[in-house]
Structure formats: structure tokens, C-alpha cells
Length: 303
Image: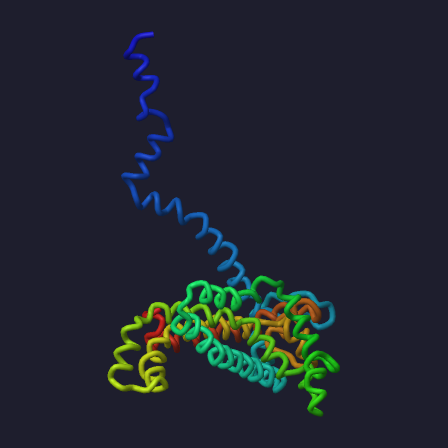
């Protein structure tokens, strides 16, 4: 075999893969389209497609006798949700639970994150605190739910701890639901706050101390304003996750009901898909409104 033929056979510039690589290198938009096609198809077909079906189904109705879908436009489902006082009560209760869980997690997350990020100097201890905060995420949702049920149930752990003082725990119900959800979503508040505090320069705290500001004033005037974006980020998680939860309230809520239970029961029990789809508008509208409200504060732009 001649030398020229050997060079041609081993030429690294040949082959379809090399040609495709050169083509993609020269056309970055084609490369970007190739990377985004699969996830965009997943988003459009599965998520946006199912959301569109839900929106359409909300304007259908169900035959009360046969249970079959009547695919004719109607606003009856929305009128039922708006005019029935039971649904208004559940909606207000759900919003109250979501706000309460968010506030509790904020109050707990700030000192925990501040201690881990600014007070503790040992890197190992700092990481140990972060790991301890995230440990609840390692266990399954139902495991944590039934563990909380064991805590709050009558003659449970809390009753046993309060018995020497002649007191009794709250039992299953609204308070148990709020505290259980606050425990569940606390890591989602601590981690953004911890990240925000780590980005906070120590020189600001030192400058405030050098100017004679007490520690409390430094925390209120320097730390808290700079933590607002991190608190907003954490609140988005805790608020939206609480708003969409329907399992924990079944485990520890007693007779308490949240809005997502209405959606779940109408899909699985009452077999009224149009009413469930109409009910799903409530958390969507609330979350979108909340995101627009925090966006106006400028916090999202500073995340």
C-alpha cells in the first residue's frame, strides 16, 4: 500500500462524526437547538399539554346520574367554587396554613443559617449544621408524616412529655398540620438563607461594629435587608409546597381539610374531573399572584 493511500485512510478529518462536529461548531444555534429540543418537547407536550387539557376540562361538566363527561362549555364549576361557603372556608384555611408555615420557617431558618454561616468558624462544624438541617430530606415523605402523627396523636409523644406538668398536647388537627408542614419544608428555607449569608461580606458586619452599632441594630439594619432576596426565595418553596400539599393533612390533620384535598377527592372519590380542574385554578392563581407581588419588590432580580 502506498504512503498516500495510508494517509488518506488514517486522515482524522474524515468520517461523518467529524463532519457533524465541524458543522455544529460552525453553527452554534443548531447546536443549541439540538440541546434544547428534548427538554422543550418534554415541557411542551407533558407539562403544558396536560395544563391545557386541565384548563379545557374545567369548563366541562359531569352528568350527575351516569358520571359521564359533558364536553360543553359551562361556568357552573366556577360558580360552585365561588358561591359555596365551604369552599371559601377551605381556601382561606389553606392560605392561612401556607402563610403560617412560611413565617415559622423564616423565624427558625434565620438564626440557624446565621449561626452556621457567620458565628461558627470551624468549617467542619458549619458543614455538620448544614447536613443536620438537610437530614429530614433523606427520609421518605410518609415516614416523616407518620412520625409526626406519632408525636401529635392522643397519648402520643407530646402528651407523654407534657403529662408531668398536667398538660395535654394539641392532638391531631390544624396546629399539628402547620407544625408538621413547617418541619417538612424548613430545609428549603434554611438553604437559601444560608447561601445568602455566605455571600454577605464579613467586612460589613465589622464596619457596623466599628461604628459603634450594637449587634441587634447591625442585624436589623445590615443583615436583614440583604437577606430579603434569600427569604423570598425560601418563601416561594415553603408557600407553594404547602399550598399544594394534600397528604400531610390526611395524616395529622384530623378533620382539617386543605384545598388540594378538594382536587384529590373530586378526581379519585367523587369522579368529578371538571370540578377538580376548576379547583386547580385556585393554587395556580395564588402562586402566580405571589410571584408577581415579590417580583415588584425587586427581590427576584437580586437572587
